[in-house]
Image (tube, each protein chain N blue to C red):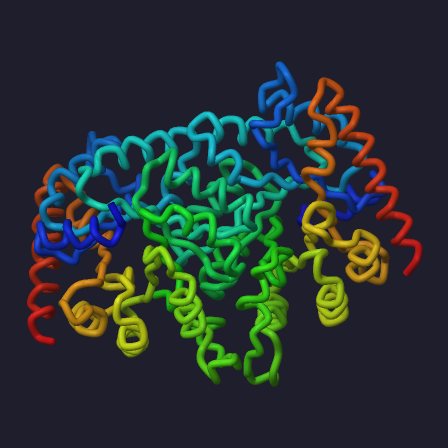
Length: 270
Length: 270
């Protein structure tokens, strides 16, 4: 099954464009809960409210050997019909990217991955070759420093455009398997709108609401496609760390339902 | 001790600008050798011929839990006076990059890391904050696809330059700890020369000789600084897979000595 079909099926099933980011802070575990326990309970409590889960590999790598095991077991706990996105931000020369693709797709069994565009086509090809998995290319990221290079005006055969628009155009050009998406931050709703207009069919993975300052409503209205789909709105800390006590799972569910509902309200406003 | 001082000390001690890339292919192990064994023997056989080792994390990640352990043990086997570079090509928003920096610097104890510039300053800051560790920013990479974005002509306050030159200028601007280096491929000697001229003091990590097609002599002459130093010439497969038999370690040593000597011959020609 193609990634995009799995994504749309989950989104329709749960009537949700919400992606829960599993970026747990080990120093903020509720009393008595191991990190794996915590993740499992968060997944159990939210699995009917999401279109996808996004796991940030960094937080597990920061824990060494044990972290890698926990990552693997956490991923396995995500229900088979919900896409699991590896937020890995990889990208290297061909034979190295092939090893990274093997790690996230074959070993860890993720449905999609995030990648850096800077090294160009052959650094992405080994990921794209997995035609049923999704590949989200960083385009206009949610952080303040994203302006340093992504907004540079570039001259190409298509005229003058900011770098992130070039990246989006190349992504479109390379999308023969139909498995490419773009990462565009909720913190830049105007750019989101522009990207959606230029690339009407590409799924957009959207971090940056909540603590990073992106406006949820604006982000939703700017990013959904003509069917009111195609946007994956990520929220991490607001959901998974909604409470630091024993009630963390029920509070996470409450937060997830609220964000999902707010997303859906804005889907109807376009 | 600053990374650059450790690097220069090792380079002088061993009279070498050679970096051995530990990118082992598990399917090409000599009969009876485990991956860890293999790495240990390669290190033992080459440790007086190098200025640094570079370990590519992808190949270990591709092996799952066991790979992570082998990575850790391999890194620990590198002598304390030889810099160990994590070729990780990471880069994410601030709190995530902080977790990656913790993983490579605190947990795995690497002396330096390679990073993607695309997300801008705040994605690099958590690495740069380790002021005694080196941070190699991807600039003009050795692969064919590097032209896709890195060569785009960009308009900035400094005038019109290819993107990779902008990246180098920003790297210089952000270098208050003196711990930044650049990754520039041996496959582009003209660009190497340009970068060296514009950034006379920055260490350059140079992949791309051998199978990737970069000319060793041209790369050395284009990249050394006015003291004949500052270049880290990486070679992986040519050395570690010089033989697929039981004599792999002695053959690796032979190959390393040859490349080191050829580098030194060209250092004298400038």
